[in-house]
Image (cartoon, rainbow, N blue to C red; front, side, top):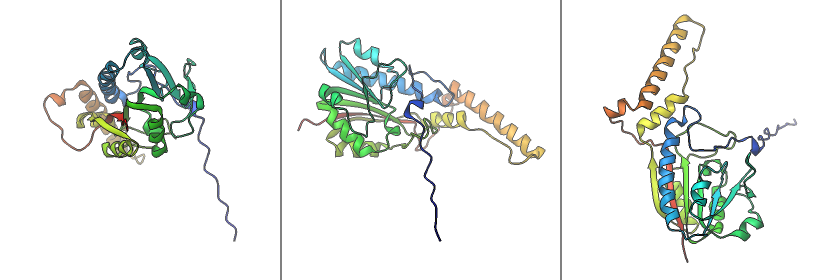
Length: 257
C-alpha cells in the first residue's frame, strides 16, 4: 500500500510581520506589557549608553521601525540596524535573520560596542545559533540588552516560537561567552491577569438560551474586570500572588577572554 504525505503549508513571507514605530499599546493585550517594557528598556538603555564613548557602534538587532534610534543617535553614537525584513521607511542597514548566516558587510562593520535586541528572540527558531551570532557581533566587554515575553498571546504567527524563562536566557548566554549582568522578571500577577482578560472571549457552545445568556454574562464580567485591572483599582486593595510574570529583561556582557 502506498502512502502519500502532504507537505506543510509554506509560511507567509517575513515582510507580512507588523512593526512597531513606538513603544505604545496598539491592541488591548498590550495594555500592560508595552508600557512596562518601555519603562524598563528606557532605564536599562540609558544606563548602557552612558558607558559608551561618542562614536561607539550600536547594533539594533531586529530593529523593526527603530523606536529607539533617536535615543541612541542623540548621544553621538553610530547606529546600525539589522532585521529579517526591510521596514516601511527603508532604514534597515542589513537584512538577515539572527539565527542564519550573517552578511559579510554586517560583520565588517563590527564588532559592535552595544547590541539592542528587544522583543526579537521569541521570533527566532534556533536559539543556539542566535546566541552564537550575538557573540560574534558583540565586542569584548560589550553589553547586549535583551527583552522577550514570558506570558503573551500568540503574535506574528507563524514566527512565534518561544516564551523563555530566565533560566533559558542564562543558559544560552553563559554557553556563548556572556556574563549575566542583569536579569529581571517584569510584570506582576495582576498584569498577567489583565493581559489574559484582554484577549479572552466567551462563546456559547450551543444555541440554547441558557448557553447564550451565560456567554453574555461571562463576556461582560471579562470586560468589566479588565477595565478595573487596567485602571489599577483592585491592585490598590488586593495583592495577587503567583509564579507568573509578563516579560524578561536581561543585560548580557561579552566576556573579554
